[in-house]
Figure (spheres, rainbow, N blue to C red):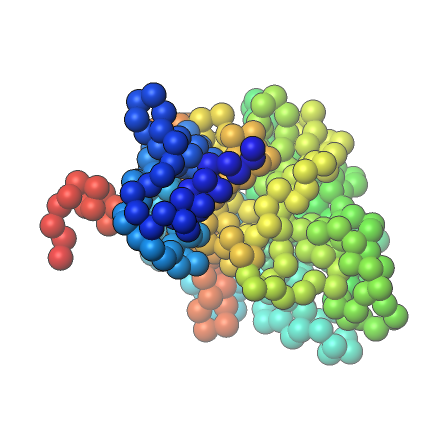
Amino acid sequence: MKHAGRVLILAAIATTGGEQQLPRSAAGEPVGARRLARRSSGAGPGDTERKARPMARKRKLSAASKRALHHRKGPEWFCQFRQADVSGDLAYEAGVNRRDPSAVIRVGELHYVWYTKSPGASAGFGTGNPSRKVFPWDLSEVWYATSKDGWKWKEEGRAVGRGAAGAHDDRSVFTPEILAHEGKYYLVYQCVKAPYVRRVKNTVGLAVADSARGPWRKLPAPILRASDTGEWLGEEDNRFLVTKKGDFDSHKVHDPCLMHYRGKFFLYYKGERMGEEMYFGGRETKWGLAVADKPEGPYVKSEYNPVTNSGHEVCVWHYKGGIAALLTTDGPEKNTIQYAADGINFEIEAVIRDPPHAAGPFRTPDHDKGPLEGLRWGLCFAHRQGWQYIRRYEVNETLKNWSRAKAAYE
Ligand code: AAL
């Protein structure tokens, strides 16, 4: 009986060509249609489910129209975005990359953000000189900045530097996220151990502080590693050559984001696979989840991994007891906003356009006021003349609100 509603509708469409022949409830509603609307919505809080409209008289239904039978959600999660330059020390600076900002948190009168800071141009792989910078995020450190208004930023200094030679983080530390919890501050970030080659497997590190200004105490060992389930083919430094691809995170564990959720610590991350391929949605990147009882771990990867089939930099926020997510850049479900009432089982709530890169939203205490409140504004990054720099983004609901108010706007 799993898809009885859908089968009924499609059967009715295919065979009657006239008034819907669906069985009707006591209230006179078409039973199958209603069940279909409920099932296809995924129903996150804040949704107004759209009732399946009575089918128009129609003999034929295109493939697209059949798919559209599943698109029944309201516009609560739909939005557009605006981006603008910030001022002060985080404004564009030729010669320095500042990228992958964390969430923005407010402590006292100030907003704080952490980000990858990396001066100098990168040369790519294969230069023959293993100490040359290979990526904009190679030979990086985690820095932080503060701002009163979220627009003008003051760079305060380094939060977490690279480890001593031989440590798991001796080559680069980058792409941080912040969690403020019970008077302590936790930074999670990516680590690379030298040499930085194409096949290097990165790790996730954690540092803790009693103040947002540090000092930061690093844990001696990573809290998360790539799974050990793939096998390289040959000795060439080529990440596409494998005899076994392994799990979705057999090569990289990127973009860690730590959330305190349901009394536990949920570490979301992006996984990349050894022997990654391109599919109809683009690159094969998916998000995973690892859960711990304490912020320091140990973290256990979820049995449900991967918890998304798409997305790039992790961007998640709290909403009404669940976790909302902005998926960008890669995969068939890129450019969507999703919601998981349990933090694990994500459903598409809106399809959006031009989302900000590596969005770090402001962690507002008002996140339950609406589905987009936890995403309302924050920092992201962009490219200009070969350098990466931090910008501000804002959720823009103007078009939607005009339309919903039935106001004339054209
Ligand atoms: C970003 C992120 C991670 C990757 C690199 C720097 O888009 O996914 O941080 O390692 O690119």
